[in-house]
Length: 145
Length: 224
Image 1 (cartoon, helix red, strand yellow):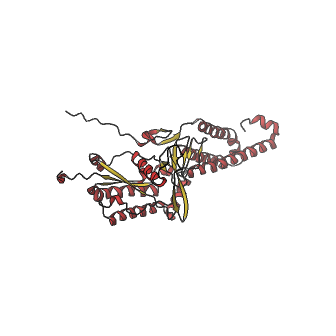
Image 2 (image 1 turned 90 degrees about the vertical axis):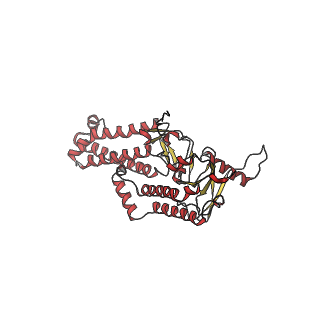
Image 3 (image 1 turned 135 degrees about the vertical axis):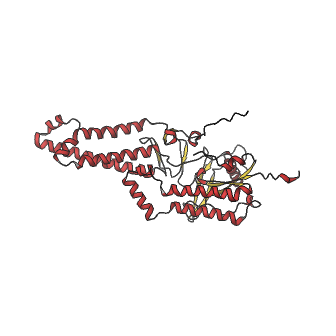
């Protein structure tokens, strides 16, 4: 759905300085993980610990989405028996966790990153390839120039 | 007085640069050439309706009513899987936005260094380590991204698809990560349905032949 984020609306008025991309971490296989390495461009903007914690939580959420257990097995069997028509009524476990991730990113943006002039984009918008971080120009009013 | 225009929100599928067609407000996503898909539909529906019209009354009475019931269930399953495969998104990777494309270009320049004009640029490859093995990720010139492992670009739909298997004209769509399960179940259930109908055709012809001779049977039941 092309629903524009409220923060994005506000911050389009601020100039976009640059974008940083956090790539996928394939070291543990093809599961969805992002590199927790701190990008140098964010050095002056955000606390390293905070950023790594955000990415780590994101990784944990994706691991939870892709987890195969008894519940997902039952869900799959039930769906197969109903010729997948049951997904017209209910959501898959993966979709539920994706919504949870979207809420998490929105909350992180509102609480932590927007006040610092940053915006995290949900990786699903980029095909789970990168986490895009938009850095907005620092327009401090009392810059005295 | 400022006139506030309530512009309609532009949906993502309307802006998608690939060669897909969309229906039902973006719920249905197919490739452009749909001719073979209609043929598939016609073949499946046609064969099954002949079976239901000509064989099932005889089989229901002389053998068991469970036979047409199971055939109907199997037919609905096959159709559901076919429609699910044809209409769903195979796992199209969104193309890189201009900023990301420039970022990747700069990264490629940095790795390759300066190439004198006139020489072919080296192939754009990114090496990643997956579980200790080095895997080369190829760069897609159309989508301007480094393709994730097992992704491939479909030239018919003009999209990069994650875990791309093939573009199936019979189904009218690519088969990729997000619709592989439905495609596999479709082929499996269709094989089952074909074998089922064929078996009961034979049973039907044999049973009738026993009663009234082979040639007369063929005359009585052209639908078989």
